[in-house]
Amino acid sequence: MKLGEALLQALKARGAGEVFGIPGDFALPFFRCMEESAILPLFTFSHEPAVGFAADAAARVRGGLGVAAVTYGAGAFNLVNPIAQAYSEKTPLVVISGAPSRQERSSGLLLHHQAKALDSQMRVFQEITCDQAVLDDPRTAPALIARVLRSCAEYSRPVYLELPRDMVDVEVGPVPDLAPTPFNAEAMTACAAEILARLKAAKHPVLLPGVEVRRQGLESRVAELARRLGIPVATTFLGRGLMIDQDLPQLGTYLGLAGDEAVREAVEGSDLVLMLGIIVCDTNFGVSGHQLTPSQTVHAVDREVRVGHHTYANLPLPELVEALLSSATTRPAPTLQYARDLPAGLVEDEGPVTPLDIVRGINDLFRASGPMPVASDMGDCLFSALDLVDTDLVAPAYYASMGFGVPAGLGIQAATGRRSLVLVGDGAFQMTGWELGNARRQGLDPIVVLFNNRSWGMLNAFQPGGRFNDLEDWNYAQAADSLGGDGIRIRTRAELGAALRKAHDTRGRFQILDVQLQPGAVSPALQRFVGAVQRLSQPRLA
Ligand SMILES: Cc1ncc(Cc2csc(CCOP(=O)(O)OP(=O)(O)O)c2C)c(N)n1
Ligand SMILES: [Mg+2]
Image (cartoon, rainbow, N blue to C red; front, side, top):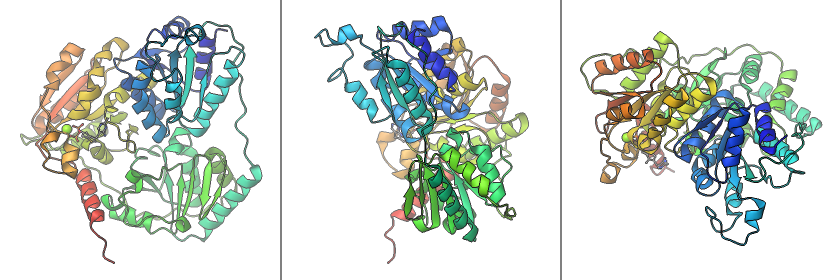
């Protein structure tokens, strides 16, 4: 089999559903191979950041691997930011970069697209991926592909494959199926026993599932564990949208001082917080009223399990969950006091629209017509998304790069066939919103709700008064038609309600709802975060 085809077959066999990419001369043979073999559908964009964001969202929403294919140098370096985000937020994403041929590398010439040296690109990607390989030898390429793709899945992090353009059509053997990386079964048993003993002794245990639970397809098994152990479940800022389809004793989303006080007390006052696949970062725990201590937590992430003050190495999360389930004794379900009533009932009058009105309108639409998968960008839209009804939600809630929303909405529909709803601010839309021009030819038609406050408003909320945050209004609705979609400017709540229903009923063309927000109008969630940060920045009384 040709190396290019062997690689595509191996990706498909391991859960990839499509490739997102932009070609270049170093990648032309691989793009031709993709088109002629049709092993995986190819979706192309106009700028590589969108390629990375779309591949990231595809992996998050569907599971399996996301795939981003680019050319060497100018293409791959454009991809660094989205891959850094995928690394930080633990998305299993495969970067395939075309590269100079073996003959070109030994020509003695400086090659176009190269940076400092021919392997500079590899060195950059070593910082934002968990495994890498150059496929420059047909004898080793299949085994390298197998190893790197296994790392991608087991560590739920991006990986990097460099594919010299003269290698794509070289005959290779099949990519072997590798057994999972082994682990110490005795250590797994001991670890599970120790966790269960701590849970048994705990009076108010809480389970916090994190992104690894979604990335490794463990939501139903973790839900079964919560039910079996009778432990209430809380999600985090980054884990918003997790466990929504599970019949569970759900507390809600833990946001520290910026969230629901009852949820905060349940988590911070717990004598055992079981954190499975959680990233312990500032957006998850930065506004905590009380920082969780090792004595009150068990934390499993990145194949390590920290129990109190000691750590078990190389214990994969899926097997840990099964080990806990196999020995867990059934305990009664917790009596839950917390049921959050989410914003709804948009008043469709002539009043100006606020971010909370947008949430009300979307929640009304989802309750009337069924939820859509949501992609949120960074900005106040991300905080607004916290108050959406339960639905599949992908959002950069930790690395927090702008530009994610529209490409992610396109990636969701490419990967699942489900039309997405995108939440994006005007600043982030200016970065990647124009990728909507690639929607129609590829059969994609997201609904884009644009929070237009004519500013980098979130920054104003944290540090008011900077004129440098002001933006011009580019009249995004007017641009829609030239890009192949429909757009409408919305000034009142009545216009918002009607536009959401019309957009939902219009298929085949993307929809831009350019919602004019009053300057300074922010979501309650962002207001709570700003208040919590200010509260924590006050000198603490001794
Ligand atoms: C790639 C990148 N560059 C800068 C920044 C820093 C930033 C975080 S939030 C923000 C303003 C976002 O403005 P927008 O209009 O989209 O949304 P809103 O605040 O609701 O008005 C900036 C510039 C980030 N996070 N990513
Ligand atoms: Mg804005």
